[in-house]
Image (tube, rainbow, N blue to C red):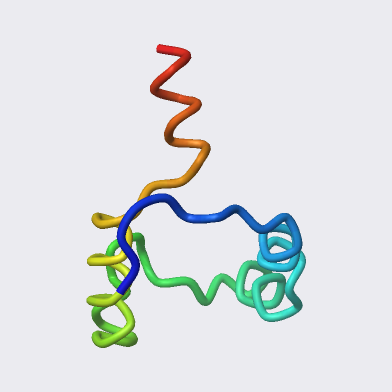
Length: 67
C-alpha cells in the first residue's frame, strides 16, 4: 500500500475519461449510486477506501494553498 503523495499521470487521466467502457455505461445508465462500490466489488472498494485516505494528490495541495 502506498503512503504519501500520488504521482499524477496525464495519460491515465485522459484514458479514464475517454474509455469505451465508461461511455457505454453512461449512455445506458448502468451506474450504481455513489458509495455503492462495496456492493459490486467489496475487495476493490476496501482497497480504494484505504488508498484514498493514506495518499494525496498534487491537486489537493494546490487547493489547500489557494484557500
